[in-house]
Length: 238
Image (cartoon, rainbow, N blue to C red):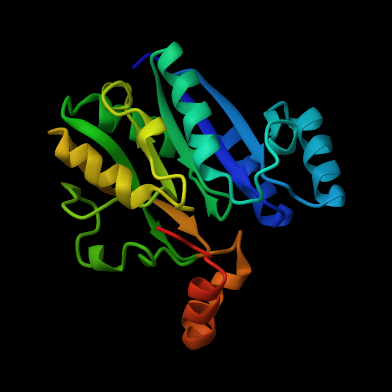
């Protein structure tokens, strides 16, 4: 693993996203990294804001509307493109979602942690609230702070590094195109291939759950409405 390809898929929620961008670009690393935002059919106003931020901050901006007519979410397309680019440069693929704020040492810490573990497929940073308390989707990790341990279920892609060793063994072209999200499937495929997925509670990142897709807050505020939307409109397929 020679470098990192850091990616952030985004649809609107630009204020949160720009905080994500600022934190990623402020990372202190010895390993080189590139940073790409995938704009997944944000509004014209928010697309203009992303373009301005890209010119000012220097990150790469890809408009998925230039590549597909498939409606958002287009996480599958993003993962497939990012996998090819990462493998071409022997790079780790580090996904930082647009409701996450990393710390200065997060990128380097995940790189070092993954590189030190030859069996690592996914190295995931634990998520916390603004006060540093572990939150969704890693609530089960409370009480295991300041540890690194293999995760037997799945790792979320809130802030996770996928290693070239794993990327070269599992083609994302095999993923089910009827689904919206793929962290569970990819985590399980890594285990099937003989890898381990590690959770780093030593590397906490600030996470505002579902900040990029506010409708998903209904899961906690109005679960009946959330599941009605999920099943009647085919949303949030995992």
